[in-house]
Figure (tube, rainbow, N blue to C red):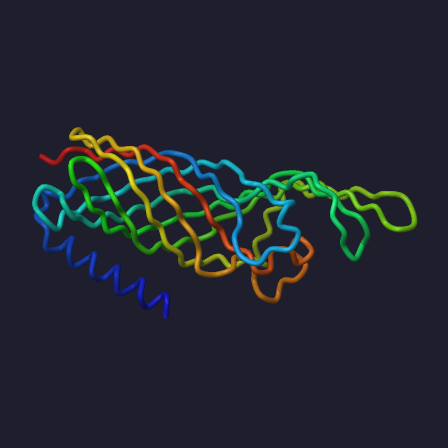
Length: 228
């Protein structure tokens, strides 16, 4: 159902692009940062911290009303999401554990935004499709059993994504300001409708993230090249 809704929105955007005059369509660039973490029903939630990652890509702006009051803006963005393991001790079936290190998830995000602009101020929102390109898990886990000596296991550059859902549907909404020269500053929030760990994968982070979803605040600069 969610995929159908996204496809329907994409078809409407395609129709709008087809009907717009070519000289009114503007190409642009975007670059900035994600301040990402996890949402949902997460076990040992206090051990997962926010993490900063890069985002950047291209966009098209297609006006629907005069003076760019209303437009459709699809974007294609490379987006780094994930979290930082806070070195906090917690209990597990193996004993006392402590995790440290970052986990990065590298995505291609394709938001399809309805954009309203008045006096330079911008409000925008729409659906987003995301595809997981790769992951990079650099986690060190120290386990202290009830009996015996502590053991340390280290995950370094682990890129296996077989236990993750690579396709994701979500949403994006934000505000910003766009100058007359096409330069803009945008603050956005993006979230997911579905869990990113497969439902049958109970081993990933000891099952802590079985019901976890990506979420991120985004701060970025955009530039729409003036039309001829």
